[in-house]
Each structure stands twice: as C-alpha cells, then as structure tokens.
Image 1 (cartoon, rainbow, N blue to C red):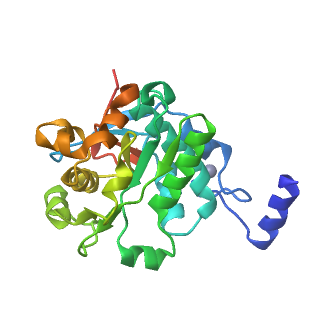
Image 2: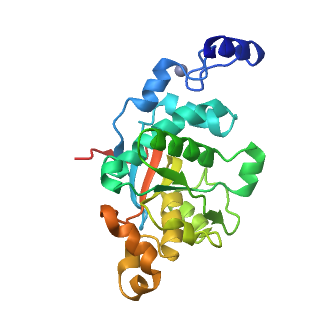
Length: 263
Ligand SMILES: [Zn+2]
C-alpha cells in the first residue's frame, strides 16, 4: 500500500531528493547512505568556545548533507525529518556510549537548541525540534527510552548568525538563551543531550549548555551545597550509572570544525 500511495502523492506533489535533486523520491538511497553510513564522530570547532560540551556528529558534512538540512529547514521538506532524526539518534546514542547499557534504563532527555520565534514563524515550523522528536522516536523504537524536553527559549532577539565570525557569534549569543519557567524541573532523571541540526562555530551549543548549567544541569550540581538542595530527584537520577555531564549531538558539523577520531 505504501508503494501506490507514494506514487499517488508524487503525482500530486512531485518529489525530488532533498540531497541531490533526483526525481520521484524525497531521499534517494545514495543520499540516505551519506546521512546514515558514517560512524558518529566527535567534532570540534576551531577555536573551541569555552563551555562547549563534547559534540558528536552523525554524518560527514557533504554537499548532500548540507542540501538535506537546508531542504528540511528552509524549504519545508518535512518528510526528511524521519531520516534526519534517525541519523541524529545515532549521534545521541554515541554520546551515551551505546545507549541503554550506559543509561541504565533512564530516559534520555533531548534538549533542542531553539530557533528564534521570527525564524519559526517565517519557516512555518521549528526544524530542530521536529528532528529531535523524530530522533526520540527512533531511540525508543531501538530500546533507549528518550523524550524531547524543549525547555530552552531565546530571552532576547539575536542577529542572523550567517556572516558573523566566531567571536561575533559568541557576542551575539552571549546570555541569549534561558530555561523556560518550570523547565528545570523537567531536566532531572536522565542524561541530557543538547541537539541541533548543524554545528558551525559551536557558539549556539555553548550558549545552550551555559543556560542549562545556570539552572543546575550538569556536573556542577553535585558540588557543594547545590547537591543538598537538588535533593532526591538528582540522587535518584544518579542510580544506574547515569552521569550528568551535558552532551551534544548534531547531524553534521561544517568544515570549519575539525573532525577528530573518537579513539
Ligand atoms: Zn539524493
């Protein structure tokens, strides 16, 4: 049934591969392979912004990857959210050292880096959140409990990041994100993984991590008096070998970021 349905929708909405433009498919086998064939690897921007968590990227930054991310983000090719989410799930799993075994069954909390409200309105959707939801679904299907906690908000407008260098991006974003009221309460109980579609300078992920740490997420919460205050919720979360380092996973990192082998 899926086959004729696809043919029918293709007649109504002629599809083309978001990666290479090949007709009659939203994602051709070759572009799917670019997205999913690579082993997730650690990526590091140079210079590396302070406070950037360890970031793992699912795919290499090929022309096809870039085209797929743009087709989903800017051209509304929403059918790509599934495959992009599957790729992201692979990177999330890698940040956890293999998924369920490492999390002790705790629910993995995926925190999307938010787009500005204006950008969401202009695009008609929030691409990173959509991919994160698809990734959480893929993780659950493959045995790793996961959910999306979209608790980060832009606290003030920021300029378009394109055209800014690394230092300007950091200044543009510094203090720009915050955790929504009541959001901090949603962040206990499992490993926290920041997720985004693409890392360029790392400024957005570093700012997102700073915002999470500001409400006590991350290793610092276990030091000193904070540990007493955060109490049982965090203590419970520590059972089963869960650690609370903030991690980050992206689909790809631009060539400005140096790829490093994981070993
Ligand atoms: Zn293709």
